[in-house]
Length: 190
Image 1 (tube, helix red, strand yellow):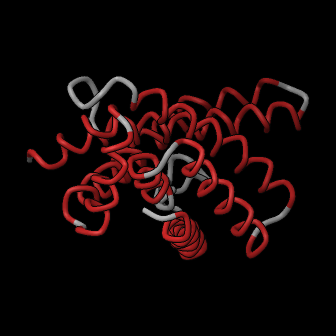
Image 2: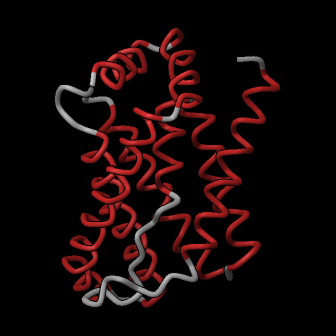
């Protein structure tokens, strides 16, 4: 992939994630037991970025999504919550991905990301409130993060296996990275 093609691909992923995040803000909360919790559907694009781009380029996608979404729909406080949750989730998903497809699935990686996103947000909330009693909300948010992560993982799994352009880009990354090659072979085998 040429540098120009890679830049366009990164921009397209960031734009798709931003649009999905904006559209999701109009969906009513489906987690009645966890007020404020959302599915985090834009994380399916993060998953695609993690599996088709280098860590650095996937980080760019996450950062651009955060900035664009905040500029279009958010405030400074929502930005702080989103940054902490998104970066912790991103880091966790990258680390879990290292285990390989024999030990963890797309769904497992996404579920981990969903839980870590909520932990990151609660850390910021605790710091802003000056009290760690906010962490009492962790079990409820962990459950919603787990459920949301499973849904996002199922969608990302489907996308990685069935969208031809993603398979093509993933095959290019697989030539440059051994771990990407293992995951690419896994997605092609089923």
